[in-house]
Length: 473
Image 1 (cartoon, helix red, strand yellow):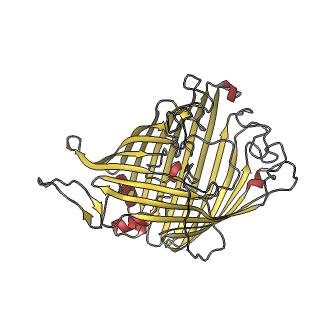
Image 2 (image 1 turned 60 degrees about the vertical axis):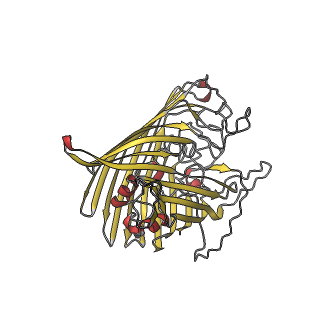
Image 3 (image 1 turned 180 degrees about the vertical axis):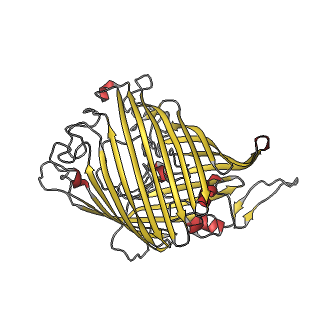
């Protein structure tokens, strides 16, 4: 799941998965959302490389496949009709079901303090998870013009199964001959994570890093579009893709904390002040505009996206003060895709204005957070390659909001600033299997390079070496 994931909504089922998979690797990885599944290959009859450079990054064809609701199929369909010849059902003869397995080993630059405050020893510096995540997908055509990307994931940390990134999508074609537009795609998406419906890899849900550790120390802040509403919201948006160039989308998101139990009804009743995460007040409008050019082996896109999310924090009822998060972002992506060489460059910048009517939570009523990343990748014949990323986050100083005086997780100077680099090498013995080693270097963490938490922990102590295997079948 972004993975850099989204948050998983747990379901209180017992779980018993029997796993018998031998992999020639000494270590493993973390939960990451992924939109590359063998179910699509089974449905279309095409190799993975038709839709992906190196999974999960999409090619130009893969982006069109997603915009067209995943319905292109080379598999026989069961299609009963009425006496008038009307089609009443369309079921695939081969359901597009697939499984994803991830495993990892993570080493921190320095172990975090032991959870037992009476001990002075540190916890382990390394953590092994196998599997770290195990997912079941149903991806592809449901009926004419209707398709899905549905994912259930088991995670080790709470030994539970939950809903991961998921989407239902309707799409069709039309024309505006009066203005010279002979063909356009129009559609609707119902999903549970803002930007999960996006077709470019320059927005948060499917952006790099495609997989990261869940063992590392999290920064003290992140924009609301970077996973804060994943699997905690439900959205409906409509989109147009005009003349193979202009993409326009608009819609809204509502809180959908499916793991919440209402104390009065004993069931999934209306959310109240005891909800464990921020609740959207009414509707959070979302928008997306992008322009794409494709020529020869090349494609280039530039765009903008954003959301306005008025929210109630935990402990505050519907009549209480709102905290409003307004994200305005820009993004761009370039690809060169040939048989031997694959090059990608993508980046995004998010400017978030945070207005806190609940002054008990902050020092300042208005805060700003700026977050950005720039990534470049190269692969040779889809077998060998890797990524280089630079990332940065800056924001307003706020000692209350950013947990000054908190060991490891807090910011001693009240700043959310984070800067660093990420390097990754990959080997793909098969198109559906990726082995990788990822190294994350922090030059600044929660406001400082040295003693950022006020308890002698430095930014480089949170550096991460992450060794993983990721396969889908």
